[in-house]
Image 1 (cartoon, rainbow, N blue to C red):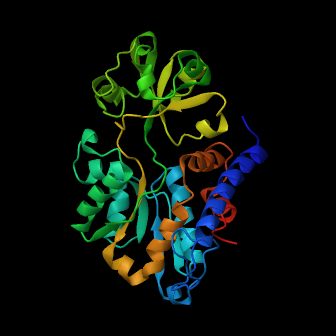
Image 2 (image 1 turned 180 degrees about the vertical axis):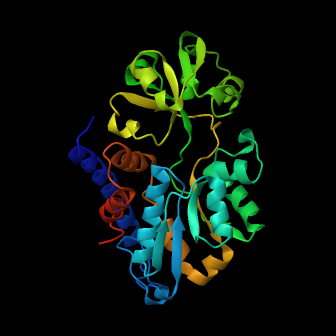
Image 3 (image 1 turned 90 degrees about the horizontal axis):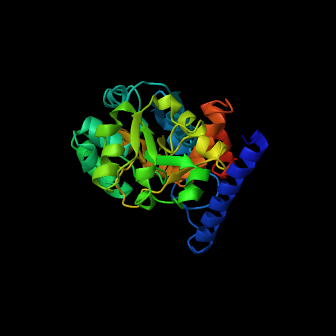
Length: 329
C-alpha cells in the first residue's frame, strides 16, 4: 500500500493538472470583469467571498458513509469561502431521510446519486436509468422540479458498480473493457452481492446486455469483494468505481470499462429547493458546480482512500482537496 506522502503527491498532481487546464481556459478570455463574489464555473483562482452572501445561512447535509461526508464537507467549505454562513449536517442516514430533511427545511441541500434518485424517489427500474450523466440528471431534475426541488448539474465522476479483477488476470486475458470478456468469461468465475443475479448493473446486465456467460457465479458479502480476488477465490468481482482500494492498490486491482454504457449513471447531483436556490443567489449554484470540476474518478478514489484507509476526517480530506485545487487559500 502506498504511503501518505505518495498518496498526497498523486492527488496534488491530478489537481495541478486541473488547475493548469482551468488556467489556460481563463487566459483565453478577454473579459476581466466579475459580477459576483465567487467566480464563474471554469474560471481559475480561489473562490472570492461575496459580502452579500453573509446574509444567507445554509446547512449542507450528506448521507451516512465516507464518500458522502467528504462531498458534504467540500460543498460546505466552498460555500463558506464564498461568504455564506454554513453549517454541516453529516451522517443523516439513507436517501429517504436526506430528501425529507431537504423538503422540511432541516437542511438546505445534499449530494445525491442520479441513479439513486431515479430509482428510489421516482420509481424507475435500474435498466430505465440512463448511463449518460447528463441524461440521468435531466430526467431526475424534471421530476424534482415537480416537487419544487432542484438538482444541480452532475459531477464528472460516477460512483457505480463495476466489474473488477486483478491486474494479473487483466493482463493474462487482455481485459480493458467488459466487452473484452467475450470468449473468456466462460473460463472465469464471478463474485457479487446476493442481489447481483437480478441487477442490471451486475450479473443480470452482464448476461442480458453483454451476452456473457461465466464459469460460475457466487454470492458474497459486499465487504469481501476484494478479499475473494486476493485469495484467488474469484477471477472477477463486482466492485465500486470509487473504491479506495483502486487508488491505494492501483498496481493490484483494475476495473473494466462499461464500454456499452449499460450500468446506470451514478454521478452526483446536488439536491436543494427552488426557494433556497433563489434566496441564496447565483453564487450558490456557481460555487457548487465549480468545486465539482476537479472531482474526477481518480481524485474521488484518492479522497475516499484518505478517509477510509488513512483515517483522515472528511473535513480534513475536503480541505486538502480545496486547497490543492486552488479553490481556497
